Length: 224
Image 1 (cartoon, rainbow, N blue to C red):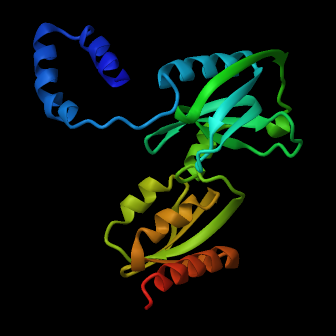
Image 2: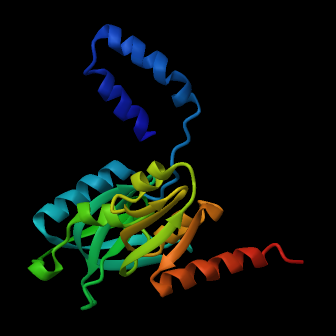
Image 3: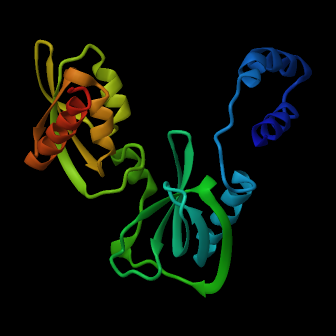
């Protein structure tokens, strides 16, 4: 496993006493460690190659396993790599499409990378800020930008604020907090639904309807 190689290298930079302490601290954790399943030979090698292509602004073609296990080939303009909820993601634009829609590819599902001689430039209007994306997207679910508002009645408001970096409280009355946030995609719906009855969607109407529809679909699973 690559994780063992990384830990071994980190140990080489510690003192003898610290190394013994470190080994005792992580011993049980390493024994029970389960590696995230991946299709590529090496996630680390993929990361290095993709990072180099991003730096050199090289077009690439990747062999990629979609979620349904269909293998596809995609010619891409890679612009960034980010990490979210166990996975590294390559963020890229498609070369054969002109809509400039950002797409996310899990690095561990990329089985081969072909580097092309052709280089690319991104116009300023399509320039990408991975830090901004990370603060506004949940679980890397692609989608449109939206500003939402919801009510939270739980006892752990700080958990909500930590999970959604753009969230801010705009009103609070007793045990009710009204929160506004800027987001991309539908991953935010998944997170808020995990809070159960502590959350009520307020705005916009499209967001409210998405939440209602999902709750109804979940309820129907338990109807005889």
